[in-house]
Amino acid sequence: MVLVNSIEKGIVIDHISAGLGTRIFHYLGIENSQYTVAFIMNATSKQYGKKDLIKIENVIDIDLAVLGLIDPNATVNVIENHVVTRKINLELPKTVTNVIKCKNPRCVTSSESNVPHVFHLVNDEKREYRCEYCDDIVDMKGDKQDEILHKQWTCSRSGGR
Ligand SMILES: [Zn+2]
Image 1 (tube, rainbow, N blue to C red):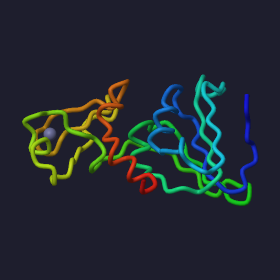
Image 2: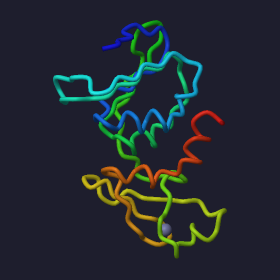
Image 3: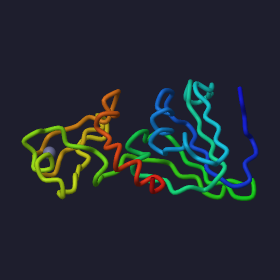
Image 4: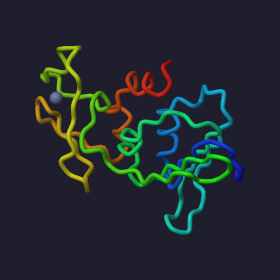
């Protein structure tokens, strides 16, 4: 196992549910980054069983709401001078704008391109979000996330590319 234990300055996303690391990795767009990045899959965690872990040797701008949407169980550690200066427990965001794409073809967001896609959390446990306009429910649990997450927006938000 590759471990980059000592980061001088950067971000460690820990306790990612095994399998979701890839999704976070792609969301952050770090596959094309210049930073030193360690991506560890299926690490054994005493507390959680298997987990994924991402270490980025740079403090980058991360949208914590989107990260929480992908995996509310993950934690983000901000490291400066080799010390964890901030530990953030992610949570499901109550409202997300332009992150989830409404799949309803009759929804106003499907026909009007300048209408923001707004979704509200309606069920914590099932991770269900409701479209503000058409009341369609999307489920952020499981494998459907990939098609629901609006890649274009999330990419441009994660580094201006
Ligand atoms: Zn809708």
